[in-house]
Length: 235
Image 1 (cartoon, rainbow, N blue to C red):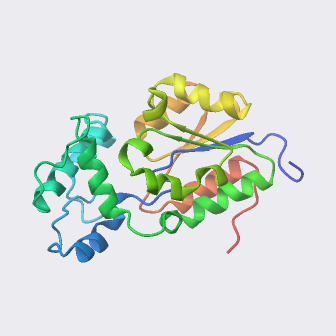
Image 2: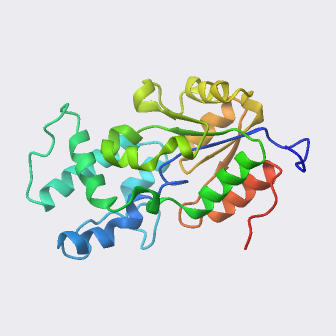
């Protein structure tokens, strides 16, 4: 870790969907064009203007789970495509979610990752910091071929998916598991996420939490670099 501030954080952990992977909200317009849907048919905007997505505000406020939110959006997508019986899987709405995500996340998976996040992760690992991914629903939401194409093992030293572990953020156990797998204490971790409830969970176990505003994420990446003792991003 030569050249780093000796008092800097010792590890970096990032939520995946939003901080690293583009949000579905950023992909609706191109999906509508590709699928031949009228503009605005996929009428969910999350945190992006124009502000019309009251249900997403409920997610951010903790009144609605993210999984419940996307279950509703999956059902709407099924209706828009004339496929009312999309949920032919476990009966919990996840088949509809996967169909929606497959329609939105079209093309090479690596092309849908934020360059600023990739630069942060690459530079942290080059400086000797372990880097982890801590996500709740990647394999539950995304088709298997998309997840495989991400090659997550090339991006981070450890990947934890709550939908696989059976423990979800903000449960304190999942944060402690991430730190343990990286070989550091929770107090040494800088944690990035776009959901307030998940950030509060990280802070509760002693991690330094950095909120990623997905409408302008570079500020969070710059703050994480400073906390980790990394030089400013080039350019």
